[in-house]
Image (cartoon, rainbow, N blue to C red; front, side):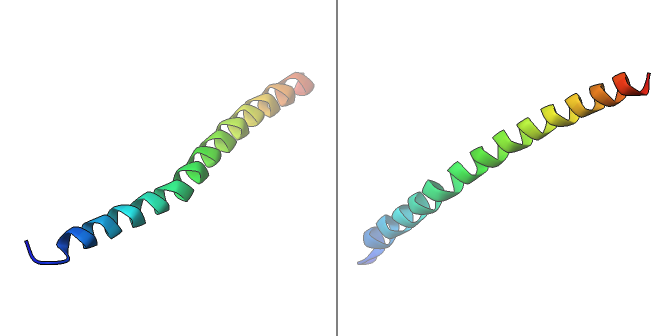
Length: 53
């Protein structure tokens, strides 16, 4: 291996770890919000059906 390859790999893993540290919580929160949004849409559809009758 060339000199510095090990250091470069360490920096790459640190960079990817830091990126994942802030991206993964955003993705999880977005998934939860979308899930709640779908539940609200279903409730709205049910209420619309009730009031149309």
